[in-house]
Amino acid sequence: MIKALSVLRAGAPLEPVRINRREPGPAEITVDVAYAGICHSDLHMARNDWGYSTYPTVLGHEVTGFVSAVGTKVTAHTIGDRVAVGMLLGSCGTCPSCRAGQEQYCTGGGGAPADAGGFSERMVVGQDFALSLPSTLDMAAAAPLMCAGITMFSALREWDAGPGVRVAIVGLGGLGHLGVKLAVAMGAQVSVLSRSQERERDARRFGATGFHTVPDAPAGAFDLIISTVSAVTDLAPMFTLLDVNGTLVMAGAPTTPLSVPVGPLITGRRRLAGTSIGSLREAREMLDFCATHGIAAEAEIINADQMGTAFARLDAADVRYRLVLDAASL
Image (cartoon, rainbow, N blue to C red):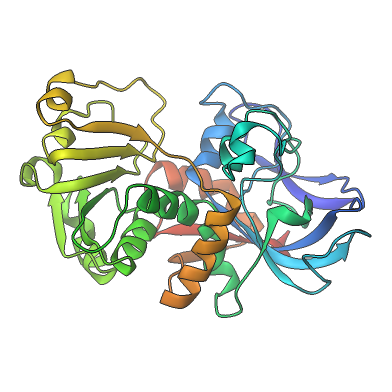
């Protein structure tokens, strides 16, 4: 029996509970959780905004910790290793996506049970789904890399962000600030699109060379726009900011349908795309890239007794820039 925080029904607050954690199987490891990032996706899942949550549920998918037990066939980790665990906790291994090394788009099942999350003292995961955490990365600041970081890294890599590419990040929150840092380190020309000028100083501190509100941004100025916000429904203003052949990528997940005008798509051969977390291979690359370039989240560490207000703070955009649970406080 271990301590955890659980959501018992849709919209209910996080409550302290005790749950069972089984012993690791032959190819599994036990991870003693050190830190767990708090993602806007956790809020959506707690409220069943997307319609597929099951309860009771233990959330938390941005985890760093230490290996405390290993199965008899484990070769990738030893007891005491520092590891990072993300949303990917299993895949079928045989569907076309898995065979292509894109486990994040697995269509064959193999996911984790609802109580498998990181808002707990301990997790049991397959050895392949726990990644070695470089020694130079701070464990608390590295936890959000396993969702916010890999989501942005995967999108930037997929759409070839690099020297000469003009990238705009919409929203300077938990995802957005890491997107800026990563895109800058990749050599792209980076701007931030925001609702107000409030965070311009931070955007430039993270390396952005441009900062605009959407109505004031120059038309045709960007090759790639990645939206990290969850409240946008009208995309028309952002399409005008893309150059010919530009792409608008949705990394945030609004809960209401989007309004997509066809005219700007046709006249500029522009594209609208979506992105999710990255593959295990990309996640390994991302951790090494962040270690090389000194990239980590701007993290505010909170204790378990502060988790009652964490979701409300996310809703109010009252976070600079990622809340991280200290699991020792459970």
